[in-house]
Image 1 (cartoon, rainbow, N blue to C red):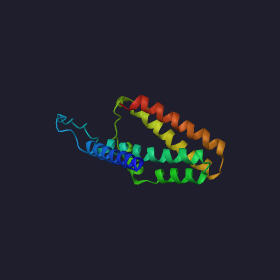
Image 2 (tube, helix red, strand yellow; image 1 turned 180 degrees about the vertical axis):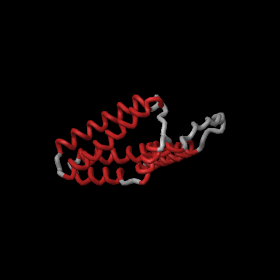
Image 3 (cartoon, rainbow, N blue to C red; image 1 turned 30 degrees about the horizontal axis):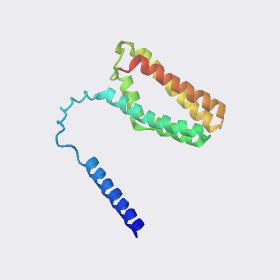
Image 4 (tube, rainbow, N blue to C red; image 1 turned 120 degrees about the horizontal axis):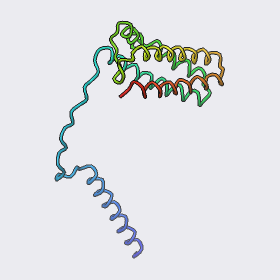
Length: 160
């Protein structure tokens, strides 16, 4: 009987302490000072907004590509590349480039160089799709790494 009472008491203490912990985590301390709101950074507009959206789409596509490369899923690579390249945002960004509506946040005076890097990137993206359609895994890995290296180089030179 003593043993049963001890176990019951331990169980009650554990349940009570868990409940107290849960309530204390769920309830913010009332004495904490309110944080001053931070000013939001200026949102990109026009062509730069398109470029930012293209980068978001590219980030997702590249994650899908890396997963597909690791899993040796050539069709997954093709799907990711084609999903990105056929996006309306990508076409609108290309049109904004042609109209001179895009400026890089860093080194905007080097837009011609940026446009050349962008063109090379898209050409390599097309090569990646072609290698994936041919299920040429060594070339897929080679060009996927080359694309990543180009991303890093471009961001170092043109992104703040």
